[in-house]
Length: 75
Image (cartoon, rainbow, N blue to C red; front, side, top):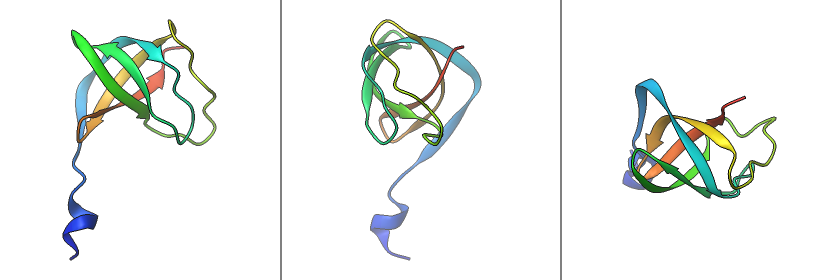
């Protein structure tokens, strides 16, 4: 198999962690969140049907893909 296709590693967290949006996240567009004691690039876990999340909004971190956190809206 092509190494470029298998280079993406996804790990799901056993329990979601709370965080806050620092830079807006939209479907197909990475943003930035503060979570796990630091700032991280972040994107929606399932972008279909999601709306934009704005700075200050709470999120749940449910996994990580490479160094990008996978998030869902808290509410």
